[in-house]
Length: 312
Image (cartoon, rainbow, N blue to C red; front, side):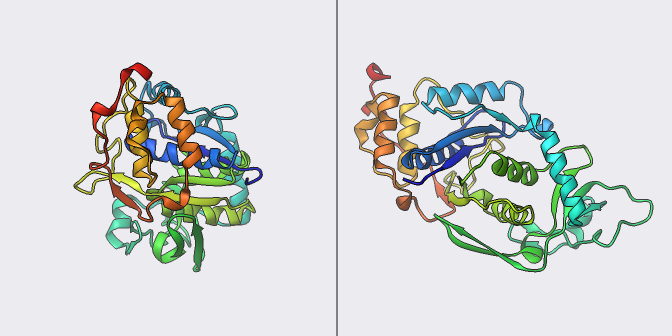
């Protein structure tokens, strides 16, 4: 047993949970329970325009219906602005942030491509043009490589300036960035292990850099394959992924286990939710999760005739 294991699931309330969300929740939950650890729930509602009315209640109800149980109080990022502001001031004192006036179109016009597209070219590092207005505060990264050891995807190396560029930490519309908020929360709430989707690999590199600057403990990372359609499109709220069923949680749960490389028996879909979790915790092996960043979810299903509503 790993002593002091603490993990979390951190959905953004921009809509209801879908199968892609379930993959991250199931993987992080089982890895925590397999190590007799804690699993916390954080609602990443730091960006008000992205918060859909009613989404938070929908997420909480869905997680409860699917048999998830979390430790500690639910953490809401919207209630932690003072903590993020304090860390932003600390970074300012360290001399590693600067105001940036560049618009997205200006950046795209001169930027080279990194691992996630156009990389900020450092235009405002030495100062903004006279008369310009700051659109963001950025973290100045060093001209060095950073290595992250991921338990699923293997060792990841990135040249910070070339591959990622200077990181936005705070926007002019008073919104703290995901990178700053997540880094602060994971440190202050003692997260030792981060299990989430591989679409956040580059974010983890950025956050690892921040963690080291702030003398935070760097948690263990494991990035699960992202669920995609047959066309290769990531399942997400933006791509109109189907909302998880609230009446039949057994089949999506068993499909999630199969997606994550586990070998659930087909008859498991007829079990009660709590019995599915009992089987899953006993048989969970992170080592069998596919070593890929993306996996098609369309072909992963069990025949609906194997289900029985008697044990729902």
